Length: 152
Image 1 (cartoon, rainbow, N blue to C red):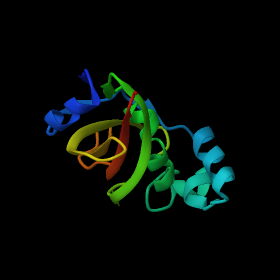
Image 2: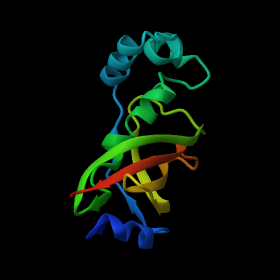
Image 3: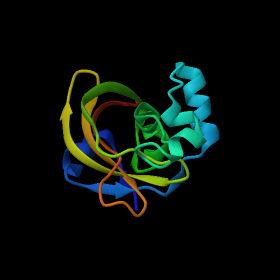
């Protein structure tokens, strides 16, 4: 279920609301593409044979790959009518709690942690947990800030 608001001003009343996204598979092709884009070619991400006998028993996604998927994983979880655009304002905190083994499915659980009016719009703090299907611990927890700019 997603959070649907009728205006940016309604964000202040949405603090404490949360929504959960759909499961999304992390495959080796995506991990390889990320490695090529970032030039991070560590064997734990790419060498299936060596990784099978490594600390995780298989190749794992880069932590930053999982973090970079937040826009995809949270798509549609917070919908605010009357918003011209949402700008990435930054991150307050990120913790990588458990690696994502290639072939796993992940999903986002997002909570509106804060919302305040500013000269440009509404600064909204989101606490997003990326869960791994079947795992007790999440892959990561991120506290992000988005600037919701109202339509004029």
